[in-house]
Length: 381
Image 1 (tube, rainbow, N blue to C red):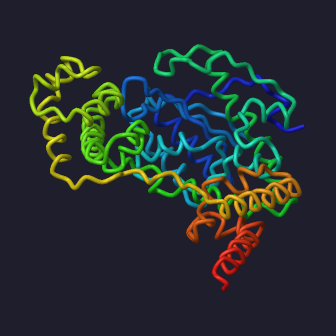
Image 2 (image 1 turned 30 degrees about the vertical axis):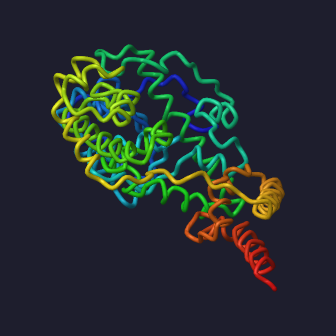
């Protein structure tokens, strides 16, 4: 039995001074990997406020109180060490927190949720469920909505936080061994390399409109205004460190884009905008509207891809092969070949996930061959 399971209730160390933090970091550097988790709050800010960092190795479990320390630079140096593997469950949000601090996410990463899906577990399996499957330990769900900014942290809340890395050690070792046995370690490395691409964590204001799915139904001229409004709001939210909806709600942006008000009075009368937003941001909103009006009217969202009868038949043939192969290798069909990726190769797009890496080797080459044969048959006299 592992150290993690022999002493499931061992009290975690709470690091609140720089001397102890530096000592912890020196010990973390010695191993090839460490389990990592974060607790943060984002209810009142644009950027997450990091409140706690939990780390574990086979010998150590510690919680770093980021709110009590003047800085966590020694810990960040460890987290960003290129030769230390960071084991994280469902890593996207944790990586985003660190990317906000340093501009890029740390790497390399072993995401246990992705690893589990490549071993035959559900694609979005939760940490508690995975821990129970692998270790037999059932984690409590007492603090899933805790206030991590409150101090002092209650002992049971600190134990809850430590459990997020305590059992992650056993989960990692089990999944790493299973992936190795299946010959899929390289698959996970590919998936995690994609997850740690810096571009994934850049909130470019010029693409912020894509969050506003309601905008797809707007006329082209209104869509251009919406682009400018969404870009302005993203800048304002970042600059003031406020949630986007606290600047102007999504629904109000869509209403403004459609109505295109030319005055503060007209802006203030729109549904959902409110007098306070018009007073605080009115001039900037009207400037964004004007910039949008000056742009050439065009659709920002592509029309949904509609398949003709021949394409639909081929799509169903591709799906059938994906399901058969996925069942054979015991992973989900949606993980192996998501619908959007099937539509890409169906349209002749060779830049998608099915045209490279492990997916191409497992199923992509066969699907590309089916598509080429279908096109050749359709073009034959």
